[in-house]
Amino acid sequence: MKTQITSEQIAEYQRNGFLTVTDFLSSGEIEELKTAVAGAVDRMGSKKVSGGEVDWEDGDTYYSRVFTQKLNLWRIDETVKRYMLSPELGRMVSSLAGVKGMRVWHDQALIKPPWGNPTGWHLDNPYWSFHSKNSISIWIALEDATLNNGCLYFMPGTHKQAGFDNAPIGENIGDLFKVYPEWAKLEAVPAPLKAGSASFHNGLTAHGAGANMTPRTRMAMTCAYMPEGSTFNGQQNPILPDRIFKSLKVGDLLDDDDQYPLIYSEKS
Image (cartoon, rainbow, N blue to C red):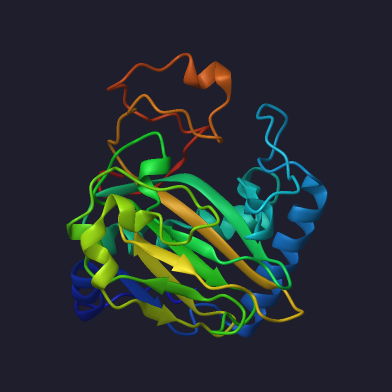
């Protein structure tokens, strides 16, 4: 993985709320990670979250035709774990976000099916069980992500204006603009990526993806990272089993290394 980062790239990320990195993976790494992701997705069957504690399964809905979504593959596949929990990747995303350490919130495979629906405009962090201006996600293209098959689009600078209100990913791809009407006049920036390239985006950067207008899949592996020191906001997220959710109260430190592993810290 190409985890070295320059001051110019950090400045670009901080300014726009996203950054693309060409050839983030080598050809061998692409094949290794893609094989591991495909195998883990297959082993999960209809389950969306690895393990047996969370009852969330694939269905026949508009959302299920946006992408096949499988979460926390790192728990069941050592290769995925080695990539997504890499300390060097942790150092990289901490540098981009400007924080002293990062925990994994959750990874997820996102596979847009042939003729798949567009991904409506949304923010990531408001879906999660912590609020942060500095959460960050990596999105690795394991197959070419193009304008034709549903690459990501970003709205630069929206991370500086966003609160923690959001819109669901539904049939109206512009529902987010009912929450933030001033963004409806902004120009979106497409981020097509060759297989092996990656993008990084702030959890409050507005983003979406087009429809897949091809008869082939568009496979990506992503991971969301939570700044060290984040606290519980009272919201249940699908990755949190009931036993953990019920044990938390608002303001509790989210520091359970089994649930959200610390992968980098300046303190270490």
